[in-house]
Length: 460
Ligand code: NDP
Image (cartoon, rainbow, N blue to C red; front, side, top):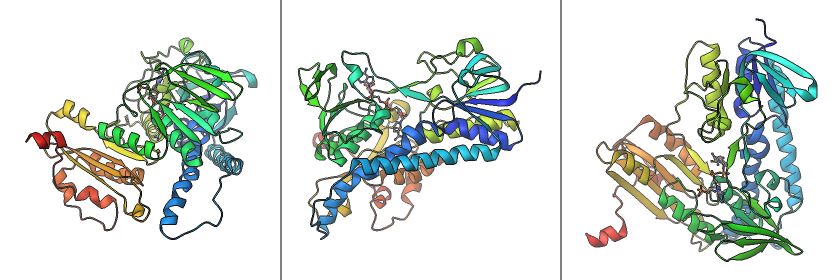
């Protein structure tokens, strides 16, 4: 049977765009449908605008550092939210335009509209009056923020609206303790808002190494963020003077904005998955095998909609593997092991590999190397900000299992550390690398003494 397209991609985010371009460039007839803006979460309402916000907000502490070095500002530096938002929007529009242009250059048909599956080979884009068929379909619709149901939740925003607020809020409460919550707590605090971070568990960033979690929570508080743990909303009440957050531990606090960063869910609603024979897993994500193939033989899915590791570079690698498998006769799967990640909190976190707790569970005995120190840059300002570096090593084999960094430039450092961890090197090999002085990163290769918890030391 002749189809309209060899490949139809639903969703023009990082994964969808990469798969569409590669496949069109290999000579296939490809279309991609996008209901919003080309670029997806990362470019339009995620990583990229978020990073601009982090850059904007970091200046407030940079000015303080500068004063320590002798700079003075005759007038107190001030921040204009609208100027920033306008500049950010111009850049995001430019980047989205580049993505769209690159699709065009590769020969991909870009259809602006919502695509719904009618059966395993047919998609309908109702607002364009189009019904199209394709031999292969790739679903790359990403995720959407999730807000729990509670009284007054309609007054709360998510990260999506946080990128477009009319004004910088004077008081913000951010609910959640994951990536987005801690990143936005830092952004708003750096820009000058009074910030409360509310998390239901015992400490933020569940799943990260416990030393990282404790260190970051402490650093956030040093930056003036009020961190409330082990509590959640009972309700939100709209008052004339603001939004009253009523918590289940009896605390009440009024803010101008309440932002929920309580996770993201795969965006599968009304996509026609059932009609196409595409199954979901228990978490509501599209179930795929290691090659990203769904339960329907000709339908594949990559990126956040499959809820494996929800990071842009992972979606891109999954898309490349899909292309290799389907169009290059080279069955490929992306190895989801040892993927580095960063939290662009202030200070930021960079992590690759296993936390101490995960490593103990997986391999048993581990050696820990840990240091905390004041970054040299802050020497003149009496700052009590500390950097944390931690290595997790398998005791039996000396293999480096995890690197954890909290502090300035941690994300930049971890990208390189990840090469070594992914390559499976030993601590001895890691240590044979000469330090580069004076840097903070040199501390990583000069950690010689095994770390023993102070309580255990006292007991010895
Ligand atoms: P996360 O899953 O990281 O965090 C969600 C947070 O919300 C957790 O602290 C969770 O608590 C809490 N939570 C969930 N449900 C409720 C509820 N009903 N009431 C109160 N709290 C709740 O999600 P994010 O939204 O922060 O980010 C989504 C994903 O996007 C991330 O997992 C990551 O993959 C990606 N991302 C990556 C970034 C990066 O690379 N820098 C930046 C931003 C996002 P608990 O821990 O108790 O479950």
